Length: 502
Image (cartoon, rainbow, N blue to C red; front, top):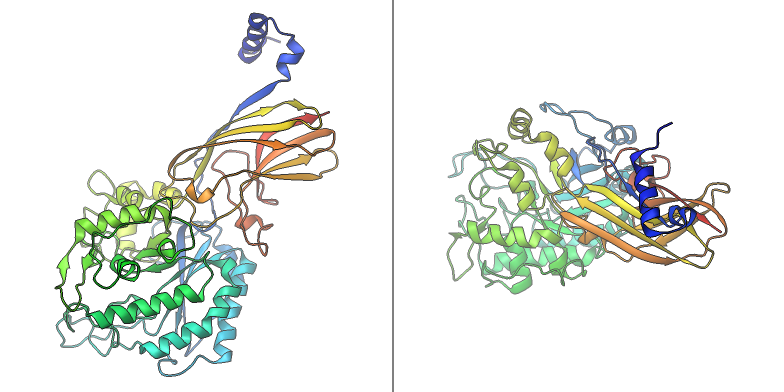
């Protein structure tokens, strides 16, 4: 049998260095990992499936339906299939606009979280009072007041009632959307918080801002710091953090502030009119206050959103195809550039598929499916081949995040050693914050004190959920985008290397 190029190169290196061949071959190994092109499910990212349930006729989540979302499938109106770990859940409080929530209703909400946990998915949660638009002779025509949301005192009471439920089920909440105010819970068409549309006053007054700030602050205070709260318009974040007179030039998050648990680090964004117009139907608008007019602020707020969102969870949906070809794939449009610049982690697979389907015909949908959120490719690893007991184990890994964003929830990064004979495991944790594995190259180099007995030990990389309730569930662990490394039974990624401990 002819010697391989690797063998020849190794012998040449040994001879050139004048080393003992046995010593040289046992020193360390560098392993290259082939990238996978497969679209596979990963936690807290990707296209989500939509669901809603009205309190007046509660429709609970179904376990088998949710479990099947991990398998490739398309929804009605979509020309593309998706694999999914996220479910958007609308809780429509249509019969509680003037009363407290009942124990029976709260128990139904609790049960939905339990079903999600059993199914291995997480929920994007929004509470609202109405998802219905009533047409009429008002200026906007397609939607006219009264809109059907609830007054501030009722909203705050409901948030207080829901706080224990949200806390108990934080492990399966991907994020919480502000909701509550206005039709669809999008803080716009509202009977009680200032109607900024042409049906009303066309801007927001100081008391409107304060009422909205009070609701947002109540949500932040009612939920664990690990949960980010998404708002529909970036300006409300600026006004909660910097005050009602805050200019649209207010500072975005810095890396030092990111993931700190402060309100500034927890208020994130959902854009439900992505690429719908030049300013995404008012998403990037200055809505004024009692002493200032409503004016456009598209360029300024877009720059703020882009900088701020690097450290936050961003999601949403498209709502109109009227902005074609700008909302199409490149080069005619800018779909991928927008998703990347604004750090999108998830989108709706059900709406608006006039836009989403164009991404199929334009050739960028497969990229978008794989790049929403994070996608980690392991490039290479350097490991020792043999160690004496008591020696440190030094590992160097090179990865690449080719996704649009980093993970927005903390999770440990673990090196797993598994004994080939006994199957015993030793767990070591890298000193790193996966939430700062931004788009681009990632280097992990660490030396671990080794307390493993003699034997042959296989190496794995494990990226589990941080919650003890689900951190051994493979559905909640991150899979690397490499061929032949993933174990569906353990949620571990094989590093394709075995070390001998003597």
